[in-house]
Image 1: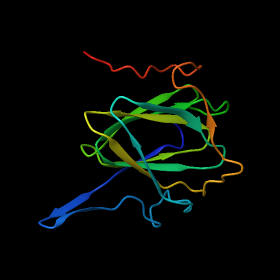
Image 2 (image 1 turned 60 degrees about the horizontal axis):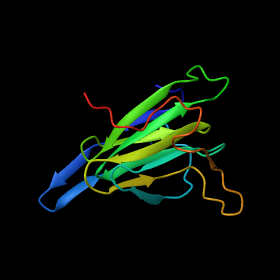
Image 3 (image 1 turned 120 degrees about the vertical axis):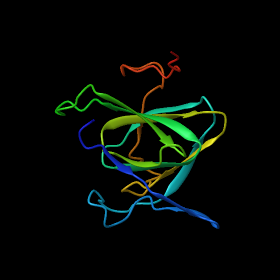
Image 4 (image 1 turned 90 degrees about the horizontal axis):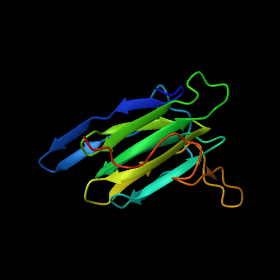
Length: 151
């Protein structure tokens, strides 16, 4: 696992009215601070990648559908430099994924429906000076292919 990445197994509590799932709590041992909450979606097969933040931690939770979330550690002084982590998360694997600063990340919706991701970053988005740095999803130095792996 990439240094600084945290995975929290989430618990779904169903009853006859529906279901409840806590995602992130301020008393979680890895909680840092609250910035904002936002939702993003991905259409089946579409790749949204790669980017990283210099300051912000992300906390991803896929609440509808399934996504493949991939992380790449390019931090020069990291003990896990060069490591790739791949997480299949969503309705069939409810987890919260903490992504530290300077770790490239992206996702691809897998399955046949739009997937919905909730993010609780530690910072608010700065429209004038975004803490977001992007590279092309397919043409880059990251040793990862977004193609489906059949077998």
